[in-house]
Amino acid sequence: MYTQTESTQNDDSSSIHPSPAARAPARPRRVRRRLPGTALLARLVDDPALAPDWLQVCAAALESAAQPDRGLPARLLDVADLLAQLDRLYTARLAEAQQWFDSPAAAGRSLHATLPLWTEALFAEAGALLRGGLLPEMAAGGIRILPVTQVDETQRAWLQCYFMQHIYPLLTPLAVDPGRPFPFISSDSLNLLVELRRPEAAREARTTLFARVKIPSRTARLVAIPPHIAAHAPGTKSGPQAATYVYSADLVRFFVHELFPGVPVRHVYLFRVIRGETPWPDVTRRGASRHRRQEDRPVVRLDVERRMAEAVLRWLVEHLQTPPHGVIHHDSLLEISGLPAVARLADGALAGAPR
Image 1 (tube, one colour):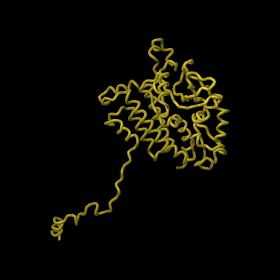
Image 2 (cartoon, helix red, strand yellow):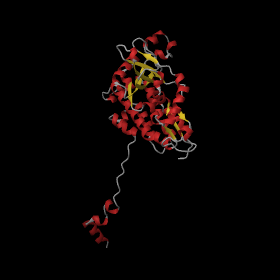
Image 3 (spheres, one colour):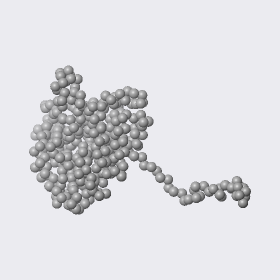
Image 4 (tube, helix red, strand yellow):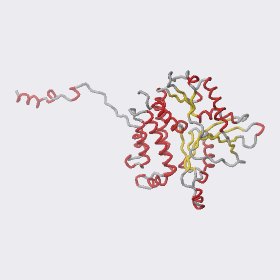
């Protein structure tokens, strides 16, 4: 019997040892989804292992924030850590970054051409993660952050009263034109650049006037709409944990025309300035006592909304003396700038909530 079996096996081995496909029904092949940080590194550098340390740290933060089994507050903090790492890169680690770009690992890339592209790619991934996953997850948990343009008439009326009573008195718009010096912009400040059209009676050769409006640091980045006002907001959960917020910067932008009665507002652009830790060289020669003055520290990064007109951007870059590698375009600057407040809100409201 054994010999016959051997002979049969030799003549037709597939009848005794069927192929894996014959033993069980074929299963669909599982395609492992690449985490955003891993995919981003593979897209930006030829060999991810040779990527600069700061880029690997940021990619790791993206990967951690994309893990669905981690709590929402922790994932928001991961994205906030990524943003802090990028700020630190520009304020204190540019010399270290330059050393990497001067090394063979850079493969001919330059800091001036490559750094802004990589920074924008990281911001884009962070923004997509916020809009596509983290903020909707917050909304599903009962915390909704709405654009002012999407609130109903009752909520908008309440927000206008809040703006006039609590924010309007803190705003100091500064006009910018050839007859006035460009205002000082402090580091880590969130600002609006307002493009105005001069009234007919005051028309000169230039019909456009710019004004800068700083979002007050004393104002919370998130403004809570009272529950009895927000109860009927679309998609908002009912119950004691339901809450609706708007970004204070969005609120100022929506009602900024209140600051310029009789002057038409043409465009409003959000921007953020980051200044370096090292003062200008001539300040260093004057003595260390002035090193802590922000006025003596150069702008190292200018974050602007991508929709900012090119001519307006050139004008802003020129006045702020921003280096070419420091101009960063955003699609989600409002969400990015408000993330620390969002992370704190989620940590306090959702950390102990049942999943």
